[in-house]
Amino acid sequence: MLRFTLFAFLYGTFLFASAQVVNTGMTDEMDTAEAGKISISGYIDTYYGFDFNQPQTFDRPYCVSSSRHNEININLAYIDLKYRNDRVRARFVPGFGTYMNANYVNEKGSLKNIVEANVGIKLFKNKEIWVDAGVMGSPITNESAISKDHFTYTRSLGIEYVPYYLTGVKLTLPISKKFISYFYVVNGWQEISDVNNPLSVATQIEYRPNNKILINWNTYFGDEQSVFAPQDRMRYFTDIYMIYDISKKISMNACAYIGLQNRKDSLGNSSQATWWQANVNAKYKFDKNVSLAGRIEYFDDPRQVQITPITNVYGFNSYSTSLCLNVKITNNAMFRVEGRNYFSNKQVYIDANKNPSTTSDLLITNITVWF
Image (cartoon, rainbow, N blue to C red):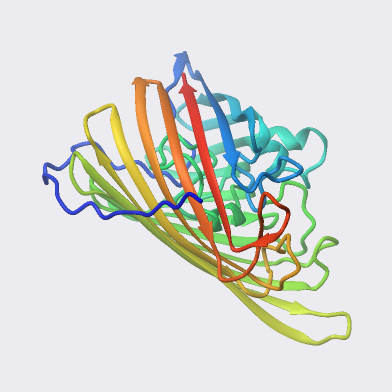
């Protein structure tokens, strides 16, 4: 059985990078070709993954990103169309791939293919205060649906269970040169079609003390009762993450979140359930084109707010470790190979012999191109 462990990067130069650190929790980090006020860019993320537990359906359990086993496939491909003038902006990103199939299963019709679709208005000529409305990338946690800026190719397990997108209205309100705040009124927890009443609220504060460090804090509050989860009531959630370019060779990031879900059963009995995760990532650059990254994480959902195990146990928890080699082929193409091990103190996995297991191993390769 493969096991992969994360090692600490203890040495390196402290030659600080001059470029501003990229917020990998956001989706707007692409090259573009411009034609007047319109710009266009694209992205194709292909992969092959082998799950050593060999799931019978060929869908790897507990994930929506790069979710197919023993199959060459497209995780996410899209065209990104943008329009912007001094006071108006718009963005439309139709997407395709196994990520869309897995993560948009509850959306209706053509809504299943929207990564982003929003419009924005700048409220004042000389102030960067914007109101945007539509489907937007979620600010929650340090990983988005776009893998190219992440240290490792796969996503953290706990991050697969927070919104990748939000639908509603966003107010962008700069506080100072170092602080930007965002306020959201949204349909619900990763929903385009609204099944919640009333609407939900989210906040984001982004702090950049210098070009090397970014700290992001998010909150979410909303009534999650729906036809899919009639027992759920108010959900309270918060996460915080930090991204730190320590030197030209060494970078790290870390994220932690906790959620509280209020519930009421058919007899009127109330209860509360919490779930949480934490992950730490580190990357070492051998040169400008080759790097090695590792991650360790833990995810705990003891009352099954987000995950119902595929085996006959109640409650879910799992550690995961990853080691990923990143090779930049050109300025807009990357090859990656990653080994990952999951292990739990519960039998939440099913092995290749179809028996309950506490472990699962994955080997996955990827080529990503953006233009």
